[in-house]
Image (cartoon, rainbow, N blue to C red; front, side, top):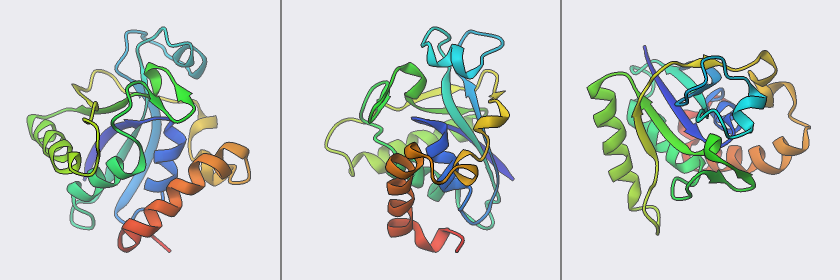
Length: 174
């Protein structure tokens, strides 16, 4: 079992896709990378905590390779925009990857190199050591599954799910 902590804008987006991915055993929305010892959604959204919205994606490598998890990450958000994803603007929405081991850091750096060819502009994804992972409030866990009719889900998340189905259908559950 391996776990990657990834930030690609609003955590609801990554959560929605990885929840449907074969071999993924859990996806937990949370915050990391900042200085506030007790972040919550409102403090993180204020932009003053330094934290990013992230997901901790746990997966079975014998079912899905780490490289596929990471390539999906780069396909599901724009890693070339600094501190924003679409209409979500602020450091909390930065493209980020948080590692715990040197092996993970190398995997992340290789994924950036591998995926750079897909983008016209340089990838600005932050690669940092994982400090503390703070689990987000229950309201944010499995958000898309609980609220698929919500406007944000319809306008922002559904296109990401469609993109995942188009390019990664072999790795998604029916």
